Length: 66
Image 1 (cartoon, rainbow, N blue to C red):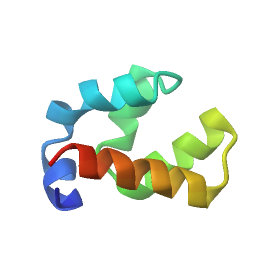
Image 2 (image 1 turned 180 degrees about the vertical axis):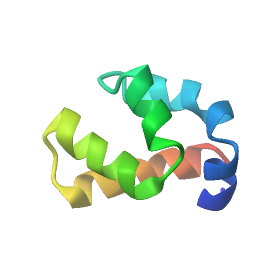
Image 3 (image 1 turned 120 degrees about the vertical axis):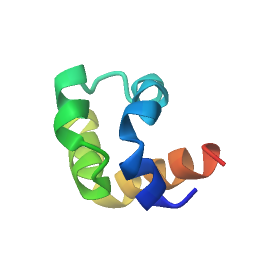
Image 4 (image 1 turned 90 degrees about the horizontal axis):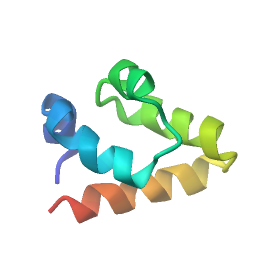
């Protein structure tokens, strides 16, 4: 799925995102507002992973939404 569609419909996808990244709070998901870079940064912060790993997780999430 195109990330622009995810960003535009972020509220629809936050449930799935919460399942995937449970350490991120509802308030943080609201602040992320579908911004891919902000999600990657938050994954790095909450899970202590490198940027490349966070990007890989987001890419996997994106593909799972197809």
